[in-house]
Image 1: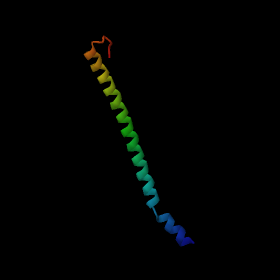
Image 2: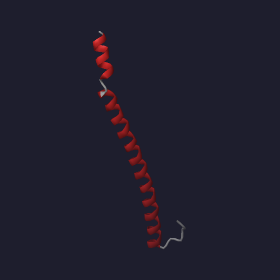
Image 3: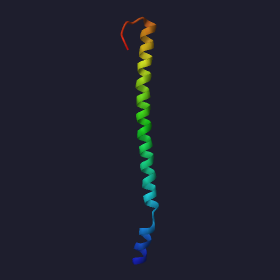
Image 4: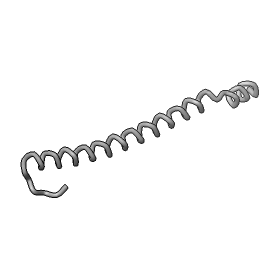
Length: 60
């Protein structure tokens, strides 16, 4: 029983998988945040351009 427990304590493959999962989750959060910010900026730009084309007098 001691050998099995010692072998389980030395096995780090599960910890490595969890670490890779956390890294992937952090990268995903960063990508989603960046894409959201980029979308907001592009929306503002396209709204400004549409207002300029249509002759609307609203400020950006």
